[in-house]
Image 1 (cartoon, rainbow, N blue to C red):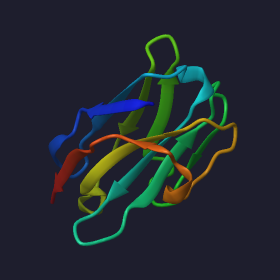
Image 2 (image 1 turned 45 degrees about the vertical axis):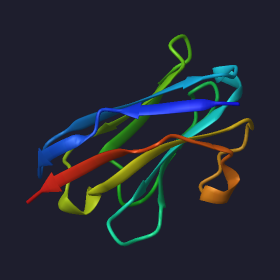
Image 3 (image 1 turned 120 degrees about the horizontal axis):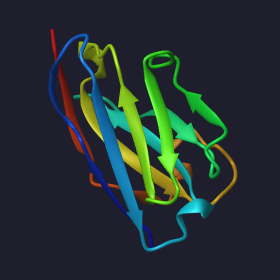
Length: 124
């Protein structure tokens, strides 16, 4: 069983930056593909970014490409999401997700483990 704990959310002005962290426990971290999703107010959960087990392959949703960077530190069992040039439409609850697989899934049903979420609010 994998436990995921996110941190780093908060309130920031448009154009600002935040870095989210997600610490995993209960499983061999390097065997997990890791991803970030978010759920805007009143909307369904949506894909943000995914990173391969080794960290050498990354993919992003079009809405965040060029502004967000996903990374991981396998020695610390941690995945990060660096968010720059934040916009009000980035507001939502951000979730860390994990799956024991080499495939880079971008759909929520494919992930087996989820964190509790961290709130990100971007003011205009």
